[in-house]
Amino acid sequence: MTELTTLTLAEARDRLRKKELSSAELTAAHIEAVEKARPLNAFVLETPEIATQMAKASDARIAKGEGGPLEGIPLAIKDLFCTKGVRTTACSHILDNFVPTYESTVTSQLWRDGAVMLGKTNNDEFAMGSSNETSYFGAVQSPWRREGSNTPLVPGGSSGGSAAAVAAQLCLGATATDTGGSIRQPAAFTGTVGIKPTYGRCSRWGIVAFASSLDQAGPMAKTVRDAAIMLRSMAGPDAKDTTCADIAVPDYEAAVGKSVKGLRIGIPKEYRMDGMPPEIEKIWQQGCDWLKSAGAELVDVSLPHTKYALPAYYIVAPAEASSNLARYDGVRYGLRVPGRDISDMYEQTRAEGFGDEVRRRVMIGTYVLSAGYYDAYYLRAQKVRTLIKRDFEQCFDAGVHAMLTPATPTASFGVGEKGGADPVEMYLNDIFTVTVNMAGLPGIAVPAGSDAQGLPLGLQLIGRPFDEETLFSLSEVIEQAAGRFVAQRWW
Amino acid sequence: MSVDADTVRRIARLARIAVKDDEIEHLKGELNAMLAFVEQLGEVNVDGVEPMTSVTPMAMRQRADAVTDGDDPEAMLANAPNSADGFYMVPKVIE
Image (cartoon, rainbow over all chains, first blue to last red; front, side, top):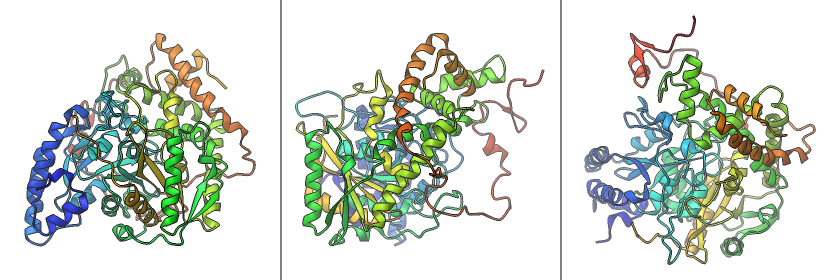
């Protein structure tokens, strides 16, 4: 019998439905895998009792023929999603004793559909980071290592715990969030599939806010099909989030395997950066060839404002973060550090509660919104954002269905290797993904090859608003051609 | 544009984050690295461009003006660092 943790979500679902497997067995195998993988630090809270109970309830529903689309499937939840009665911290000291009295819309929909919660996964503090090293709970180690080396590598970030948990086969899928690349960059680093849906596709209600006009939830999974299955449950209208779109959720799984013949795929020339590693160039060309053989038509396109997306992001995102994080004042929840008076209490609480990266971003956000600087920085950045979005719209209006780009400028790097002296060095990780958040578009990262040291590399497909289905069809072509990338267990 | 030590102190005060004197120089360097990075936005011609106010073209939904939540003081106060008699407790604000 194959090890149960090596099943894909779709395979496990089908076997559960046929009653060849119980959720109790499947869940127990994953609980054991999570315990054995503690050296990865992928989970900040394991919930084996809850998982066992949920699995039992799922088995009872399956026996009665009442199973939902994710019935009995063990999942991991990024610690940015509020889970009722289960500690939720955003991996920040300022929230490390916070137990929500409510459930986020996205996770409540997963439980509605029968999923089982294994625990909460590690992430960069308040999702601010690209390596999972800013977490209050410490860095996550990627399940991947360079050939013949023991150097610990980062899984990417901010959804590093979710990426590591999926790549190490500790769960059948995980929730994640993406503000500038936090789903797609860790997916590319760990050989997993991650999709950031269109802004407004998933409700943001009950997700700890970072930058509200950029944040979106999405799944990380072993395969394109698994991501499609999960997204269907996560997405959908929600009266509690006024920016959540009132658009019915299609059956994304039906798009997996659908022909891509005749689709026009844009190849944006601005993504061909100076100094791009030849391996990234190679998989990009390989991706083009695969899509072409599958009948898609490739067209060269231009997105002239691409290079301004990252600097504009580092104004807009910190500005929104400084407003969102104003709520952590030591009064209503979270950490409180006593002070001489109430102002001093706020200042001491926030000084002790926020880590260096969060403090830096809150301060830069405060500065760009302050009197005298608002027009020069924030307003200008929002105008540049309009131009970035317009670049994409012009291509889509000209008949392009989706675009193919690299997901990241490099493969994974070592823990402690980047961003020490200059924070901008770390920010450059998101250079290919951040444009998509700025324009509110859907983007998927799919594994497409390996570098010379055996580390996975990913490609990104960018779609029209609310056309995640085309992304699933196209990325399935890449997955079928490239095969799956599974980390060898060393932990 | 770049910030000096006094501006760093002023930003920290506005952000309500206590910063020690020996952290100012380091923070100044970090903030100036970020400001230098975003400087390139100055090259973009934004004449006549509307700032983005909505990511997707959608009309803001309105709901009936009715109570949909609340009346649960225990849940509200469940995570309070300090509460008594159904109130959040804070240090004395008015002398």
